[in-house]
Length: 310
Length: 310
Image (tube, rainbow over all chains, first blue to last red; front, side):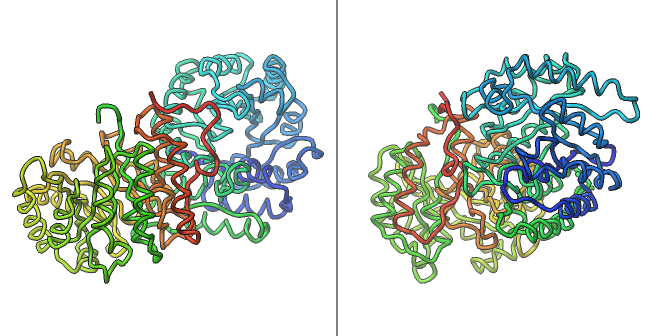
């Protein structure tokens, strides 16, 4: 991170693609990942190790990881829902493994059919498995606190429960926790408050990232609030691919192009070249002509005289 | 302002409607203004006093002002380009008169065919005219620093020139200056910096408002940055009406619905009821079925368990 200020972690090939029915061919996924890495993107969540029956879009994740690992200077991240997925991720050689933990237990039960206690047990098993891997080859294992800012089923989620869950996840052996606004419920004040609380509970070095959705248009404002509190990794998705099932005009994740523009314009280095990033869209739109791509900067272009952060 | 924290100043009937070719009937404008005031909106820029030949959409501004003045608890604002317009605004009885001053002189010459010196002279004349009105009836006269964050013609705009212009405008006799991101070029860091510089130059009490566009999706993040520096008035437009001619998917102004949601969710009182605000959209969309209305919150709805700021 010495030559960048904020790590923009691209989650489009995972979060974006798993939200749409169309299956992007493996070769296209790889072309996308390679082009975006060439544009300067340092970390990409390339897929998830979930049962292909549930998410056929992710059935080729092992192959995608294999190709992504050959891309220079790229941290290859994957998502797993359980130990079984983690074993696959480890076998594939992913650099970073994330597991979502729903702070709303109702959401957890509905989404992965596991209670909080069952999740902590599962995560502890994965942590133990990861710890057994020799240091140079050991993946970074982190847990994302899903529905941390509210749940479409439960409504408001207790901040104390978020903090306690973060502590229990650290106790279970994860290297780091992240805050996820799965539902697009967050507001900047809440982001600020919750980042501070979790930092106080687990230490700043154990919460460096946020995963925000743009469902209510507050994605960038929330990212700004998080960065103001010292967060250095922000997830986003190229073209907001995948959209938001509840909001026809809204991207799901923050749009990478808009996020990179905001950060670079503010003087925060991302390592990403915007023009090259905008070119990457063609790869996705050519392969998925029926899927809308979102973003303001792609339409409006960068301001006249715009310069990347130096 | 004792019972609200942030004044959301609705500019849709002026900035929004003047950007589209369709002419909204006078009765519909009035219905919109009345409904939005009833939803809790305290200030509405209801039109501009410009030659009807140039902007036929605004030809009925005097009638709209007359009706708006009967609406309880509403500050009736108008925009004027020159002394002639200001005379009309004074005759109509507007509470607040704003004049745009383009910090980019190229933009000024192209837009109103006046140099900076000519604008200062014009503004001083208006200020003198306003000062001659007896205290209880005197409108609030302010100047908006247009293109303060960059210009589509000149590119970057000197921050020193923004500050110097603010000082000269105060010297010319305006009660207040505002910062306008006419081009949607602003980023949060720049907003923060420029608000501070202008505050330092003219005093915090003489710069309370910002007018931001959402061309590059940064509108709410920029508003957040401005509020963080003590700004208490934020312009926005219902449904982002008018859009942005350079960006097909983008609203021009910040969308009022999204702004109000962000502020209320953060605990900042606007006085506006979101459900009633969302209902106002129907008035505009029924009358202008071919004009797209924007906004994320209108599509996604407010989060489950959402409560207004108390």
